[in-house]
Image 1 (cartoon, rainbow, N blue to C red):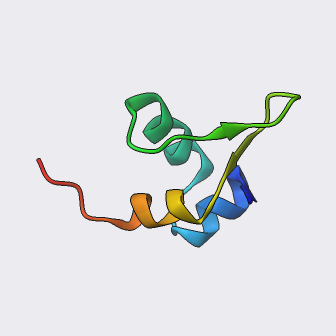
Image 2 (image 1 turned 135 degrees about the vertical axis):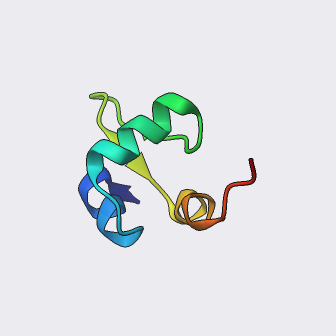
Length: 53
């Protein structure tokens, strides 16, 4: 389980990019009871896959 800052470092992107990708549906953040985003290894794999246009 990775919070947004750690997730961003792992995929070599900024946290703001992660937030934008979430809005666009490219990745899906899970939420804690307090509303904080977190990601797991499956989201890292998804974020690192090339996107077909």
